[in-house]
Image (cartoon, rainbow, N blue to C red; front, side):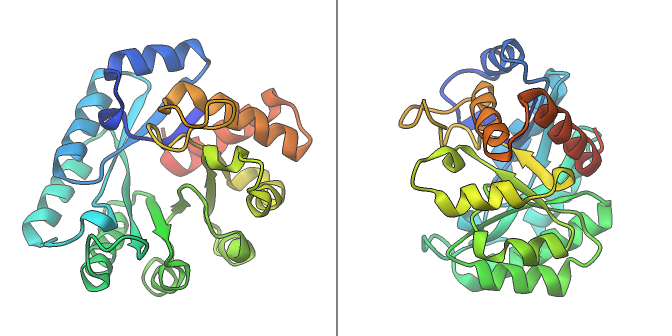
Length: 249
């Protein structure tokens, strides 16, 4: 199994413990994601330290205030590292007012262009901003591989699939009341499906309310297999192939 999106530096336990626990659970590869300068540097360090860990380098929309040429230059330098396999997470988040829409959009476009420049996939965060996120991707990201992290747009699923994007489900898809996400999970083609933890956030059932960790992606994967009417082993094979295709690891 793989964990397509986690934040090792934000978890309570040290990366070595998190990686060892994940390996014992059968999680062989994971993507640790940067959201600002410090966490991007930590992501690269973890990818250098552990064979099964890879990095994504980006600026989270909530942290986009003041994003400038120097910030972009740092991202470009870190993203050129051989263990960096994606740009992001980036996107739009209008739920919290930590950065203006203008700053978010400016940082978003810059990172789309960086992903194109380096031929790396783009990891998307979107919250309360679905229409603007999709519009900006369609305008600027043609030909870029796109991963919709912690998928939250079930009403726009067909539009996303028509673009050839990858759909990644986090632990919140296991929640009983997330019926629209359940339906979306069943409709995603096998060659576009990923699973993730977003650790330390969004712990899946039966661990909801506790800090999340990469090992817990197996709970989300088991739920996904049940919803899709397939075996865990078959779903494992499918998501591993998807991750290898999009991230090139």
